[in-house]
Length: 219
Image 1 (tube, rainbow, N blue to C red):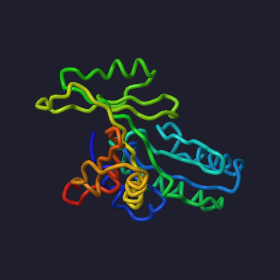
Image 2: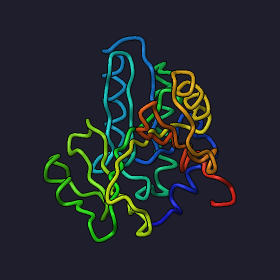
Image 3: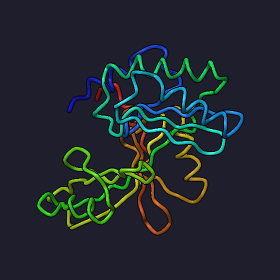
Image 4: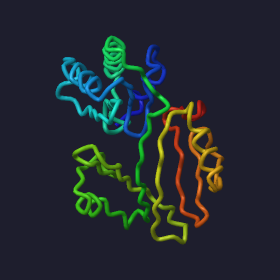
């Protein structure tokens, strides 16, 4: 497990169509029709660099979402050229990249280190392992689940929150929209990497632009 892959991806040129989220490099391409999105998916699937990889594609109405990995730590340097080639294919078929639509929702389940039970959550959700502390939907439809260590000094025994991963260009607008809808900012000390917000009942959610918008001092 290394952060070299996603760091090099973020630093590379010619990847304006792509956003790096928790799940790795992701792009959304809009098309004129559902059939056009299917044609684009077929063209991308035929690229020799994609076969046999953990890439995931989904089609909805007039758009195609493609994720090159299912986990940011599995981003490889080879994904840079692959992403460029996919963008070329999309452009050749008149598909338009929509980075503002790229997002990923993850459930973070927190517990004290001696009480983390990732096996239970994988079993009850029917998920497959992803690294040592997470699980993924084998069909790629539902949100990932990640086990977060709680500080042993905290009085809480367990907790849960949602992570909403978006591009760095659109994180602030998502936060603003949440506040306008009645939410409150609980913690912005790590912005623009992430913000912690809550609804009126205190249920928490993180709007995350990491690693896409990771602070330079931490990179």
